[in-house]
Length: 220
Image (tube, rainbow, N blue to C red; front, side, top):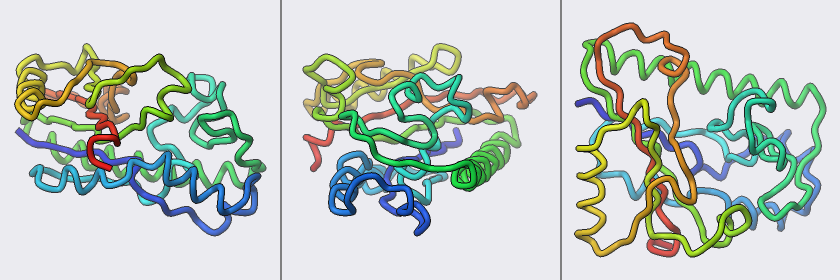
């Protein structure tokens, strides 16, 4: 089985031109960036053998896990589409023009082209591919959208890319360490690369996708 670890939200970096549209102070931005970044997730998964693909920039510059078009992205109604205009607590965060939007989407498109290229290569020999979407979350941020309490670990699944044996193995490891878990709550689903979601893959390999959201309270 080939393994691809997707780590989209662990970077704190933003390009210099990002600050031109910032609506809050840099001090407040630093605080929000720390809160909304999946801090240390790449460290948590460092011993998992497989191809790791990590986003270069912070989700506050470009959230590569959102749908490209705001009409398709439910979170865009709250100001959290590919480009964030508002933060989880409703704070007006960023203003931008069409030129800025095009620069962000250029990065977004390049990111997904590379992800598709990696996915295609890993499926080259029609092997089974396990994609692990690696995240963390905080009770504070989740409480703005969902009803607490929240478990230690959230497992996100998609019915078309689901494997019970893999899920059972994950649950067994979680319980062995005395952590609690819930499936598809507070977050649900997982990333499916465009190469697969748009039905461009015509091979015979099996594709399994799972998201792991680690509650920050158990490691930070």
